[in-house]
Image (tube, rainbow, N blue to C red):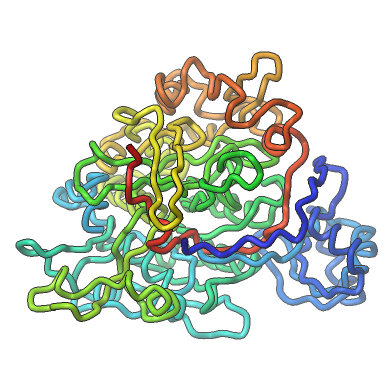
Length: 569
């Protein structure tokens, strides 16, 4: 499995109560264990706090300003946190955490080929790919023009906007590759993206190892907002993430994507690839990463198209992370899309060299190509599912613009979720993973498949609109310890009372389904998945305690060794 190993510095359960401290749990632990350790922190100010910036140099070294979320990055000894807490106007202090990396059958599986036949190809729409860079590739830069219209690096000390890791180019190809390098005639395959005429804004935040920082991602989101009008940036794709460390209200990554959403940019985020992780006894539940835990964004899980263009045999990928989110218990993912063994653009680098067997031979897609390694790479992960949805959003935006209509991110999210396919899914199935010799059971509940399977044509034909006074925030859930059931809670102290899901036109059963996905507003009717109130798994998801330790941002992509290839009998 290509997934960065999670090294927990501590497996202690740490109590978290929002409002008790302005310091994140991981930073407080560093301060306690090694006060002399130098650490990069993100300091968020309240509306009165910018005056404290001038005082920060007496505590540490200011690295950069993050105007997007009214914050700065500061290098300090951990012991200085005590002094920082006492400064007026400080809202929250957290570690500048590291982040790392999170189509021949997939495009027709979601009916994007039909949409393209109708002329919807994303032309004129800008999609910001915040990733490991975008390299030169014939599917994005050819005789029809270079559709990578802007590039900038936010990797500390690196100005190159190329893709030495190889993840961002693959993602960009799924969004907007036009298959110029693959002929696709006869028995040969053709690898075309969802929105093959969309423009790509390349904002590089990950290095050659696939790692980066919160602050780099935040700065890139800030740049996308600033360039929104110049390049018609309507969509941001974030196929990356890290573990949830605090409420989305305080998480600086979540604050950044929320600001982009409010600026009119649809933000699409990978759910994560920890659906097989049972190290905490949750059977993969509660593993959605940040910023996918934000109720504002569209969080995407991964399906397996099973190597066919028919949806009838498609199944949920067992590696796809599941909700609810830690701390806030938000219903996630929002929907799912193909993310298993996806072929897309290759950029020569770390991935293509360490997983050379995943490089597609030219004879597979080009007449006379033979066994020579070509220009495409096969990868699996929610990283690959995310640009499917980002591309679908670009098609929706293009179609609406042709009719003189501007779609809000909330309307796009609601239409995608409401139109997602909810029928034809089993109650559960087993996957047998040959490399690990393990069998994984996948339940098709709300925390696994969200509102259902991406249907591009269904979303394009939807006409419902979210009123400007409403928001399509993903709802929260509460657990009743007496009935052992979890309930959707769209209107509460966290989400407020202006949520679209409670309206008659967006009734919960029309968004999440009335049978398998959601029955009578009850998400889960027993305690099998999470145990009883005395178990650690229960406390992790439903209690006030969460386990933390891995704060590395990673691209949500896996190698062939993590593919879901065989249905267990």
